[in-house]
Length: 200
Image 1: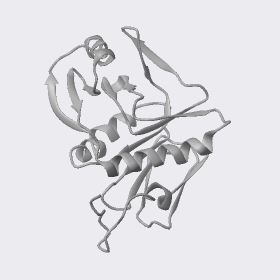
Image 2: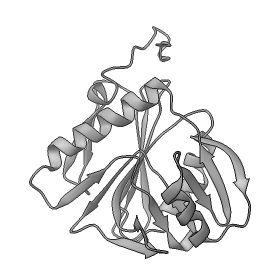
Image 3: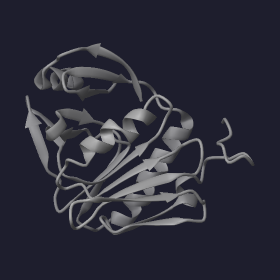
Image 4: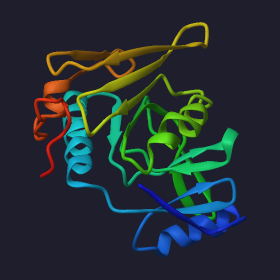
């Protein structure tokens, strides 16, 4: 959850050393350190349940899921992000900078939207994540309504787009061999007749 810029033009090394000591997480945008604010209960429920659904299907397989505590490094954009869920397959690979490791080979990345992050998740992060050679699937999950946007890398390097807005829908994720039912992702979210999430 993006809050505000703190230290412009910091080096990667300075950022990572700071992260190792910090009590709260920050992301890194090419020299600018952005503090992450606390998530809403709805955000936490959706992210936690999405991780649990994927984790349960990957047990005993060669894909490893991670929560929002796992930092991802995107070299092409010089960015460090903390997605809500990520999955690496065929062995997790890490870039070590200043002795601090960050994941570099996610196959799947999931971002749960909030008001403060929506523009970034749909814009810069979408573009930057797609520069990661290993990435096959990027999910953007709304929290105020049942809606999941799916971007998938095609064999020619282009990206396809699918939109799911019905709680009865199930999303096939061939990149990690999982299925994601919207009813399970939003199982602990109460929606009003208008389709908006009810405040908890």
